[in-house]
Length: 244
Image (cartoon, one colour):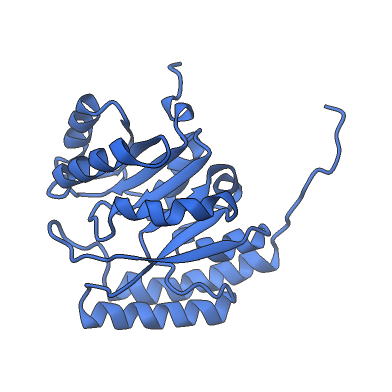
């Protein structure tokens, strides 16, 4: 088995990819520029989540050109939560970053999050001056308010696609479909505090959004029910001493 190269880095930036062939050239350009100047040694992990366009071939081409880019791939589309969990299972850097392939947030803003990652296991962005349509902003506002009421996590914007997390803590979280919507609440279940930091937000310039009314409002409602069930049965276990 080849050595896992992410262990040589401080930060591995996860980029889930599902039919993003139009965005991938910009992903390569922008993230290559960021990793060259980042305040920590950073690499990129592209996670192909069952794309049925040319994304996988483009990902392989990018990884051949860019020595700090790596990929994992699944032939089936499992969704964002599974893509994040799959990435966490293979990453060996201390920190895991997250950004969407549509680049509506900018990797340069990881520099706003990283100083807080020494103290906080989860540092998440808040999209300032969102460039989405009025309808999308309203749907997100309703979904966030409902989630806060159901989970008590106090997070302002769990949908912000810019995050830095402690890798070992991320691996401890339970994996379920929709998990990505509850990262602050799940970190809190493990006794891990989180920090929110305002970041920039940009319009989508290529590709098609994968979010609509059903997966922005309807599905999160049922995910909240699942989270409340999980929270009622959650066990946090810590070994205080050992002779191993």
